[in-house]
Image (cartoon, rainbow, N blue to C red; front, side):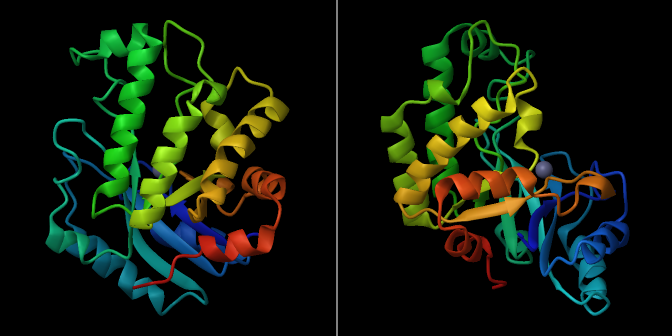
Length: 256
Ligand SMILES: [Zn+2]
């Protein structure tokens, strides 16, 4: 059983519960290491120093390791530089998700082309993930390829991803020590797919990253108590990759 959860949200961003409530849930689940990773986006109002202080106080209270993290959102024009290097130094880890005004917001001019042209969409996705993998802020790519809920004019699933570009991305992630997140509620992003098919596709993709020597991280992306520590999906992916123990250990990021 996986005893870590490196992706959890609280009421500091869009989570339903406070940080102590989320930590209580982690304690009930018998977790040994967790990361609070609230969204930190361009318009986020809270100060990283206040966030750190709030979590630091709780570190003495709970019997497991608590990492202080955020989940950044990559903006195609501004990257993630809205988080200063000084604030970055106050954090143990940074997740980065590919959402926002790359292809996901209709008000952005480039959206229509991405939405209509599969080749353009896939090229943009890979080009952007390659940039994320090389950004010094980033430790973990959150739920990679979580695009099954987008309103695209073409069919998309993980089989559409070019093996060649997956190898390229995996190599960049290995070189920069950026982990691939096995998000435990990844199936949320593909509501139209049956579980066995999506699982087989994710195992095939994850195998490329494993073979390239990329580390895996496991997180629930919990936005409420109910999903903390529920790693059934990630455990199935790791079982599909074989050699569970080694990969789980390597997924535990040490607190710098
Ligand atoms: Zn998240």
